[in-house]
Image (tube, rainbow, N blue to C red; front, side):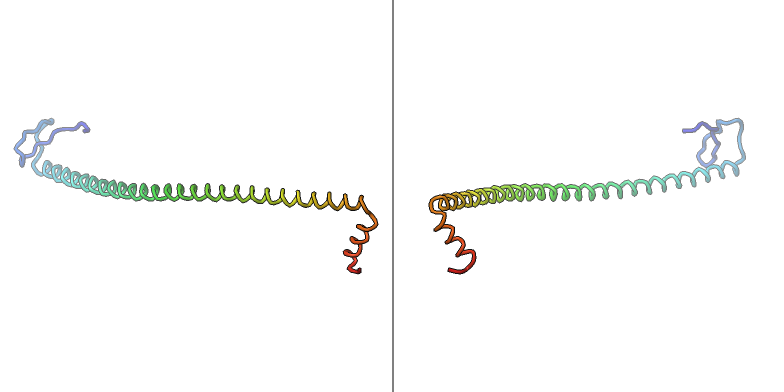
Length: 135
């Protein structure tokens, strides 16, 4: 509280603590000014409390939204993990299939290569007939 002089207020029956007694009209004006100031301060306190309550409610809503977003993020992470696992499994399956087809192609080339070496004229003619479309 700021230091100041005490005011004599006949309405409250208290003696003046200041330098001297002031006229009743001046003291009454000061009392009225203090009442107005007090009412103003009380109004500010009410407004700030109302604002504080609004902020608390907003904070509660924000926390609820945050929880919802975190739960959604968790669900998305689970879904992403499942999709990644599925993609890895499919990639392995495709790799196995490609390997099997490569092995088949290699075996076919090996068979074709060995049949050319055994009887090149007969195998070669068959191959040419098939490629040309003539018999």
